[in-house]
Image 1: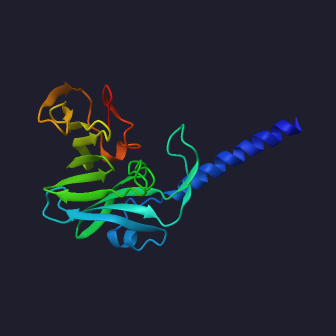
Image 2: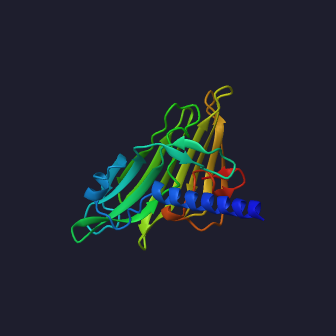
Image 3: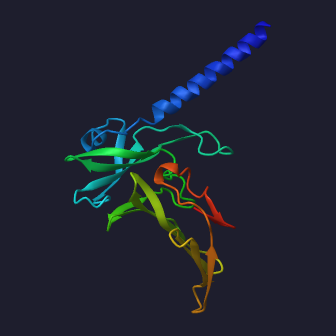
Length: 226
């Protein structure tokens, strides 16, 4: 009986400890202004971009933040618990002259060691023509996601995946158009001019930036993930 009590106590302690640790890893930046985020002593601004996201004539901001300290992270159910520096993306809208955070995602931004053969992966961030784009350049491929402001959320409207096989030279380019519900998929070889184009239709509701989990977990069509 005592042994069972001790086991239950230990399990409860572990669960409580893990939940407290998760809360302490990711601070809540919702409602905070630009200065308070940039002056946070535990997080650094890895990437920053500005532009008018909601077309009200005022400058808005998107930031990718990286923890200054490494912590134990488990990025997927089958992943090992490893030390890493977590990353966060936040979107701030100008409200009465002050930029305030309205969107925060703690999962979507790839970490520094998640670039495959790259020793260090760092995303690019841009706001152009009211659209927010997150871009990754890998060794032989790249990936981008583009979002548009709609009803207080950033909704994905398009994405693009490019990859080249190192040995064969075969390449694949996929352009995801969520407003049309289609993927324009091009395949070929870098040594040949001939390109095969296929239109793949899909019927999936576009996700908001807040809804994204880890990159490449969202199945759009057969063998097509974002």
